[in-house]
Image (cartoon, rainbow, N blue to C red):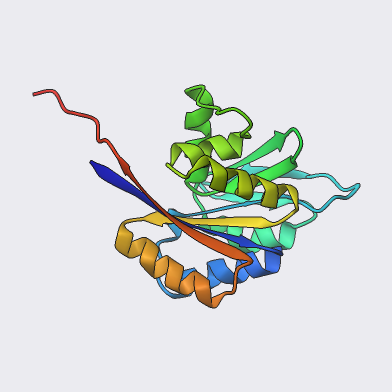
Amino acid sequence: MGEHNAVVAIYNTHTEAEAAIKELKRAAFNIEKLSIVGKDYHTEEHVVGYYNAGDRMKYWGKLGALWGSIWGWFIGAAFFAIPGVGPVLVAGPLVGWILGALEGAVITGGLTAIGAGLFSLGIPKDSVLNYETALKANKFILLAHGTAEETAHARSIIQTTRPHSMETHTTAVEEPSSVA
């Protein structure tokens, strides 16, 4: 048996989420174990575009300053148009979990693609629904994952950034058996 450990924080603004990411980076938390999810404000402006630049993402749009200043730290990024939520940008390992859930048809009743990715990480459905509601309300979701020690470290740092809310999730998962 292995474990999935995650700390999920919700921030009211992109500025708060960016400050948390910078604080985690300054405290030497492994940025490759962070994911961020957010969307642009309701506006007539639309995403102008995004592209990969050698495993790094570039983005232009309403929140280009936010995404531009931190986007380059993340490996893996995606843009999703989610019914009922709108255009959503995701950066970090959560992108792979979302794609894995979509490819494996793991969409659980009532969850968006982002919710399916979180659920596949072992986050309980009621918490996932809360995160999806926060996203619909234009909040930003920051996810730190890793060993129990890494997530405890992340939690202690994230607490200092005063998120709107924060939860820690630990789930035992069965490791695939090897054939000798």
